[in-house]
Image 1 (tube, rainbow, N blue to C red):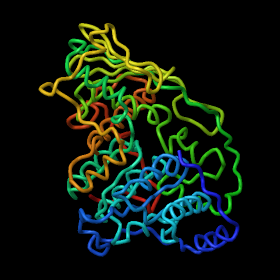
Image 2: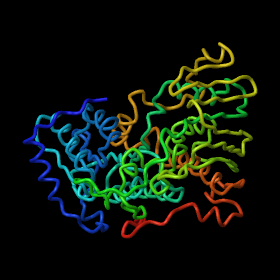
Image 3: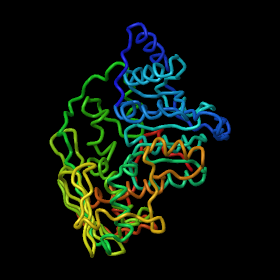
Image 4: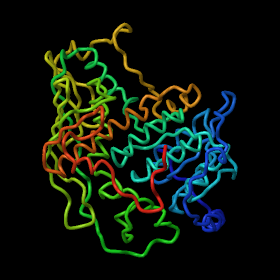
Length: 436
């Protein structure tokens, strides 16, 4: 992780004055023709990238690889928190040795720039799909953090990517992590026989219950724009930035935060990455007595039409695949691959078998390569949507307290009107999802 650049007082005051002067404009859809981003990047030019969301993950994980990449040029940064915005602007300018990067608190100003080819979205979850849809309509390719906020949002996103022929990368590193790639390849190539069971362990939520006491909004934070489509709620420090993950209005708790990683390896190995389970049941408790209200403890079981059963419980993040002739798995995040026999562990995957595509350089490099080639990245919109769906199904099973039957082709619950009403959520005006 790149260390934060020191900011001189003079430069801080100059940039603070600039960002403080941004006008708060009413949201509106700008037709793609007006935005003028119809053309794709020339192979002879660097890919111009705008960063939307420059908090700890946006800067600490995503910005560095773009700044170091020979094919990318970061030309704009955007964040509703002035402190984050200034830090990102200084980081980019220091890297390039100039003062050229645009800084704004309004993502629409980034999307309106004709010279921007792609955007990296590192906002809270409740903004992921809405900004992605506007970006795609503006002719941009998109790399966006996971997960979606609802199942309905995910389907709209997939449809928009297809309609506009955009390149979309669901942003996680897992498919470039050797341990998870190896596990998926071993299972997909029959090294444990017929897959029967998948055991997924996700961590417990690291904090709780959160202080709901209303507090003054800090200077430099556009809190109304941070809330965006979410219901209005009084500002409190425990609501924003990292902690949004533990509040239903903005995310899906620990299951969405971590499930989007390990469930992807599960779906990949099970060859169901473009489908999903057919029934789900689960029990759990929720955080109570404070600000946080997502799932605390959980025990969820998924069943697939191919007979595979997947379980999910809290503990040390791990995954295990059990088949008719052995097992493979690992314990701990990126733990070494283990197996029931050395023969399984050491087995090579021959070229004529079913090697799974990966990019050892990671999701950022993979996305930039695909912006040029116009091919799907290793974690495209459809697969990312299906993984997020697994997370949402787990949460909905716990919240409804009953077994749910799921049709992965129609993406509807079977014979359950109440559950189908939970496939999406209302949004605060004027931040409705655009038509794709």
